[in-house]
Length: 151
Image 1 (cartoon, rainbow, N blue to C red):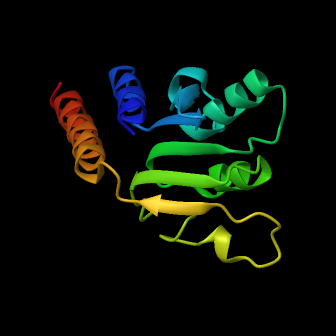
Image 2 (image 1 turned 180 degrees about the vertical axis):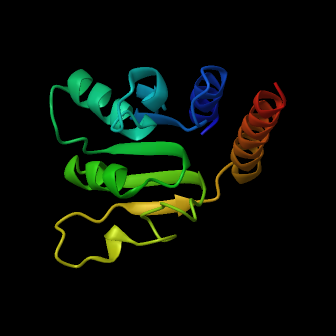
């Protein structure tokens, strides 16, 4: 999870919402990602999607069996769909996303019995660090907007 936080800090420095993700297999990080939506002008450039693509390429498979995905923020519906589609068996996240989280906050895709894959979820790992980073980011955004309005 510390590596996911490191990725989130990279996003923050680039002016992206600070979400970081790593995928681990056999105790080793096989893929990393952080939000790049703004820089790429791509609504699909979420940390999880970037990491899933990298892991699939590295393993030469769309099935990411025996892996763990660590992410600082609860995945949205798109990312939860990617997790399910790639067969990731375990997800660990830091903080809930009360506006878009799809592992229990706004919806829970995992409760859908018609889906054929249901990863195990652990939440709250390094919660305070993830929360503080997110709060600082949005505080900085508000400060910048206030300064721009004064000019």
